Length: 349
Image (tube, rainbow, N blue to C red; front, side, top):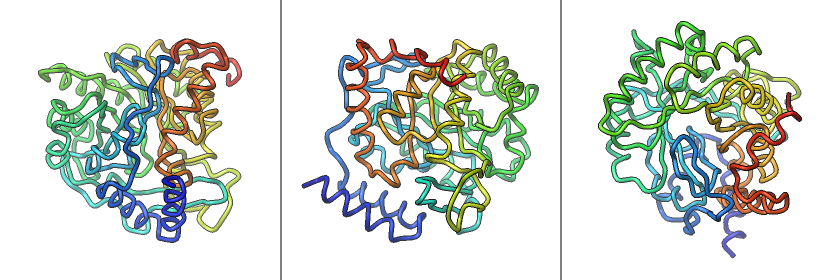
């Protein structure tokens, strides 16, 4: 019965403009129209990543709940952890609409939101007293004179109310933001964030989110910086600027591409990165099934995140993926998800 209603709701949402549909999905969650069972868990699925005790390794990526307005409903949707944001010091409207496009044939999306959010103070207030494992994606204001400083500023304002933080220098939708992935700039930025984290009453694990479009040399430089910066892990990857093999009228839109076309590219980056660092990696990009989550884990990810797949699979997808992952681990004789991490890395390098 509930599955039938979910399928009907998903069909209806897809009749609306994508950004309007996203807003309606958030409203439905606020009204209690989502799942209510809580995180899926089992002895096999429970794992610890960068000190975070997760009921399962299937997380929600940043961007779905930019302003932390549906934390309580999301905590009941099966996810093992949730990431909200990106948050910037000051509120900003983001880029002009339209800025979100479905590529239905490819089960993908292109967005150029540009860090639209309510600002760190409003988001910090909503993060207080949250349930489950919740992280915050840190961003910089588009017109900031000190973008590197913005990341530390957001962490200082929100750090007491989160379980982890992500430094997002890999969004393609804020001009020149990706320039902060260069070795010198990244070292300085992370030093500032780590100092702000150390000053918190309860420091949190800090992750670095990287782009999938880095060359192998650039990836090696990022890994070198990450290994010595004092951060807790890496999230691989953000959206891509690649447009190879896409279909439909929106395939050439500017912005970051996410969804199924990103799966292979992001997984190869993940696998290469796993050979360059001992830091835990969270795999993101094209995860839409239990098998794809399992592939990311076997390529070197300690946990995974998804977002775009929800557009095509609905909010119960996290529950389905976690349960399917449990079955795949049992099939292959893994007592814990951690035992499977990196066992198939050679297939991707």
